[in-house]
Amino acid sequence: MYKIGIIGPESSGKSTLARYLAKRYQGTLVPEYARSFIEQKGSKEVTWDELCLIARHQIDVLSSLTSTPCFFDTDLIVTKVWFDYAFGRVPEWLNEAILRYPMDVYLLTYPDLPWIPDPARYNGSDAIRLELFQRYEAEIQALNIPYYIIRHTT
Image (cartoon, rainbow, N blue to C red; front, side, top):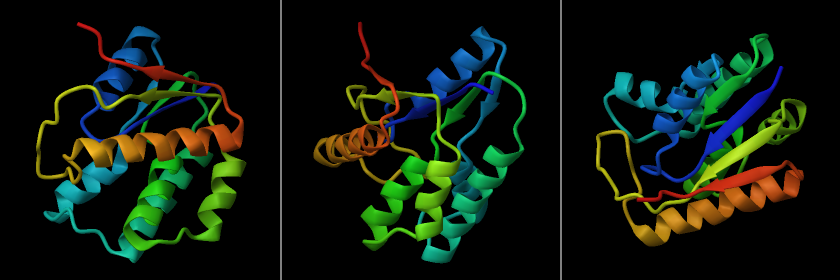
């Protein structure tokens, strides 16, 4: 199975890109579970235990997919960075899962699109969006997985 992780800061075009690529290449789209979780909950405030549920759902999906290619609208790296950003720590089982279910390639979206607020988004600050971008890039580099930075062009 070929797995393409599409990650980046909020409001940087991940979902649009993931949907387009899945349709274009007749692949499987794995939507962002955290968004649907937050929308169903009705609050963007997520506890440690809820973030664990989100991560375990992502792991369950990764372990069960068999079709190819798969386009992931966010993945475990985003969840790992969010654990660290929100709680200052990351569960060891999440680090193990990232190693067990690696992506084949990442498309890392640069935060050069305008921020569009919605009820599930947190970080509208350009500085925070850039910081998260840099964190995601560092995680990908540490895993030594190929990646491409996707920038918006007019």
